[in-house]
Image 1 (tube, rainbow, N blue to C red):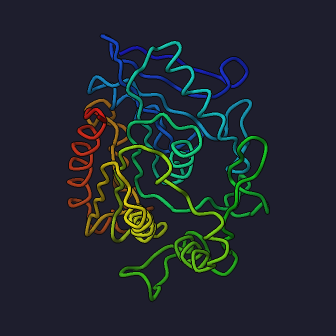
Image 2 (cartoon, rainbow, N blue to C red):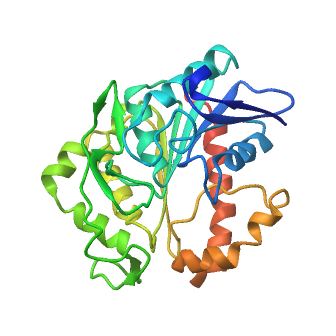
Image 3 (tube, rainbow, N blue to C red):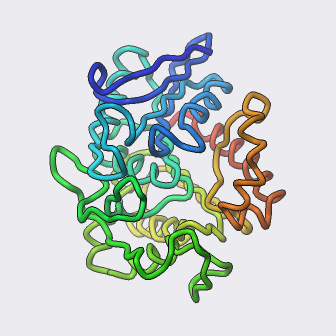
Length: 306
């Protein structure tokens, strides 16, 4: 497996590439979140490379030349990554994978940049949200994403009413959920803002795979998937669409890093169970979901759109 690193000054984006030794004409852009993360994007790019697919993790914030926090992140970062894969790596089959916050940027890239055969959204939201500072609590009053120098519409989530790390019972949830979950669900009830900010995967032209846990404790990803699914059905979207809901699924689902190679990371599973309560409560089920998700995602990427 070959690795390359990219920076904003030279390449227009910050990212990390994992390429199979034999090369590949197939690639996945991986969008997770910041440069420093408990689950770094490169580990997911490497997992794709394990299956003979070039993986390119694109960082959204926290590297030189990027915003310091999730606030006004230019979607053009992904546009530069697409250009590099086509021009330098000669990729002919391109997919994009967005997990959690990365789902916003993956869906927007598929809509506005285009050219992706497959769009994979894991634990997604259906709208961009308001940017935050590095403390992850202070809202900026600006969108988390920009395109061509303009802020894209977003929803406002009020985190002041509930502590982000504390769990609450909520009438719309089947298990205790975080204060962040509550804030986002309540923000999603602002119909005017949601209508303005709604993502449009139906404009992507890609085959679409969406995966969510039914008891996602971080934000209501299942709710978002059902809304996006409804839009696709309403317009009779012509490409293949598949949705997967895991009955005991946490926010932490989808593709995961190579277990043999990342033994140190997997030793953190008890700690992850404290951070993600649904995962901790249904650890065995969620570990099984990891394996199921991997099979579904790799199959989805390897199938070529007609």
